[in-house]
Length: 329
Image (cartoon, rainbow, N blue to C red; front, side, top):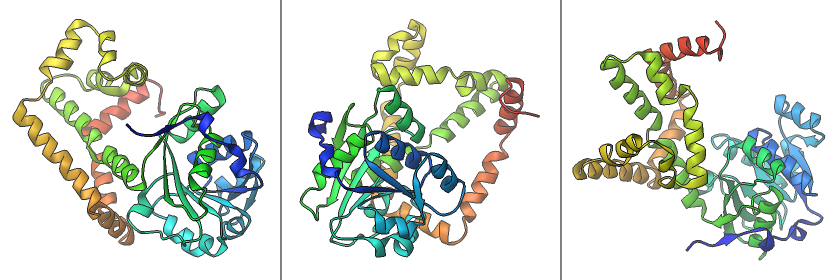
């Protein structure tokens, strides 16, 4: 069984006298900064001069250019997007690192694929909330909390785990619990859930029903536009995937559990597809493809985005959302 840690396992004293620097004041950065400050810790922000810089100032933080913040901070949260993190680290942060500093990641991506290589005199740890940025703040304020994956990649100080747990408590996660993981595991799971094709599956469902003569508006409402799925997702979270099924009618239960079940040969094909997704992540092919896409100014990304937005489903969705008052003419 995996190792779990809770509030009683985490001691904030390991962060006494430390300056915590948040690099990237976006959804995760802002929420974690506010939570850490509310936990009684000293927090500064490193940012370029943009709207996030202004917001951090408005929130009452001392804000510095990245390099200046790196020199001041003892614990550095790297919360900028994965694709720009290596460049920002090399150009602005690395030179400011000191012995006994701690580099904190919320994703294993750049360490797993070797795009960022920390010096050997710092702790390298991960605190990866299993929650969107705004939820990190909202559940901290409400007292509900949220779970996280944690990991220690490099223990230069001999205190890296204790510091990681303290940081997890500082952002409010050990109240619900954090689980020991690894940079590689977090990367595999995170990328897998993004690449299994959920959006395309919903679109195929839409296409099949419209081809069968069902009205686009009725189909969109049933699939997701009504918001009913939000309540179902909460039931998944609160009760469990299969336990929640009793909240539905017997007809629905039969359809979900019996009729929708794949035949053995169909299930085997789907498992093969999913294994290929994992292999493509673990062998580094996805990371290579994505890096090349960035270097060539996103040709495939932009082409597919344009193609997806031109799909008839999107046009019907826009019309429906105007009727529902969610978008303007």
